[in-house]
Image (cartoon, rainbow, N blue to C red; front, side, top):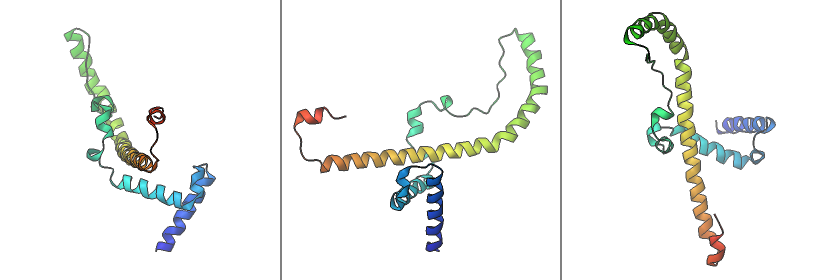
Length: 149
């Protein structure tokens, strides 16, 4: 079974490189590490366990809004008539469109969750690597370290 998985991974890596993926994927160990990192992030793609949604601010500003609201700037009598027509004619069409699109909305929500988890995992890995580099660097004079970002 492990041989079969390795063969499938190798074919996937070859196809990705042929299609223009990162040249770093020419190294099978790099590809395996990237696959492991992204798989772990995708498996842990729980929206409640990611920091990015908190940083994006008010969810109303970035989440899909699927509810339809009928608001009018007209006088109350005209608004009532127009609202009634919208509810009787437009609402069934909009409901059908929503039902048709709901699966796509759900897929996009899942992709967003996984991408948030991947970005978070990559950010954490970047921070860990930067910390390791700082520990390994020889002590430098204060003027040299002040110039670095």
